[in-house]
Image 1 (tube, rainbow, N blue to C red):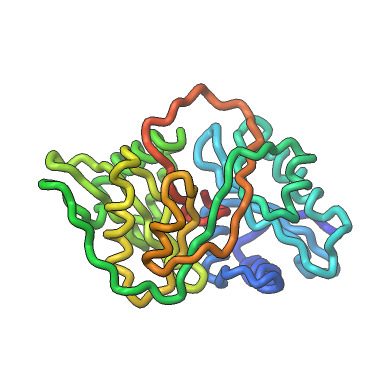
Image 2 (cartoon, rainbow, N blue to C red):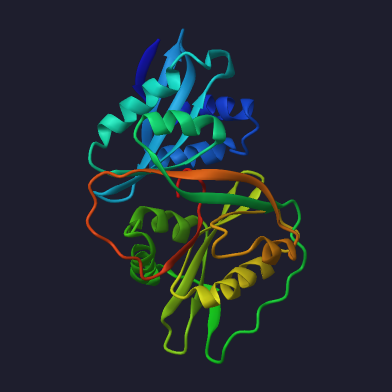
Length: 280
C-alpha cells in the first residue's frame, strides 16, 4: 500500500468510493472538493482504496471530510492512517468534522471531542413556497461581488473564519442570497449551490436569530420543484418549521472538533447551516 497526496485527477477514484456508500457526491462535486482543499489517498496495486481531505480556511481553522475507505478494505486501520497523515499537516489548527456513528469512535481516539449535532433535511421536490413578508425597508436579493468583504465579515462574526476562497466560488459560480436592512447592511447570507441530487443551502449566517427564517423562506421561494438539502443546527430552526415546507430529516451527524490553538473568540452572529458536512 502507498500513502500519497490527492490530485485533481483522483476525482473519479473518490467518486467510486463514495458511490459504494450511496453518498450523493457527483464527479463534479469531487472536482470542487479537490479544487478548494487537499488531502491524502492510499493506493493498493494502483487503485485508490481510501481518501481524506481538509479545507484550510485561515491560519487557525480547517474542516475535514470525505474520510472514506473501500468496503473491501475496512477494518484494516486505513482510516486511522489517513487521519494521522492529515492531522500532521495541521498541528495547531482547530480541525472540525461531522462524524457518522461508525466514525465517531475513531475520531474520539484521535483527540476529537463532540460539540453539537448537525441534522440533514431534504425534499426531492420543494413545493411552491410564498415569499416571506419582510419588515419595511428590508430586501432579499442576490449578493454581488462587491459585497464580498461584508459576506466574509459576517462569516467571521459567526465562526471566527472569513473563508474568502469559499465566497470566491459561491459568488463566481453559484448564488448567495442576502437579507439587507433599510441602510443596505447585510443581516444574513445563505449560499445556494448545486450539490449531489439538487441544491444545498449553506453556509447560512445571520446577525439575529429572530429573523433567520425570513431569508431561508425567501431562498425556498426561488427553488420550487427542486431537490433541496439543508444541513442545519436544529437549535436555530425547528423540525416543525421545516416539515411544513416538505423537508424531512434523513440523517443526524455528530459535530466533532480537535481544539488546536485558536485565539479567543465570541460569536456575534449565528451559524445556522453548513455548505456541506465536509466544507462546513
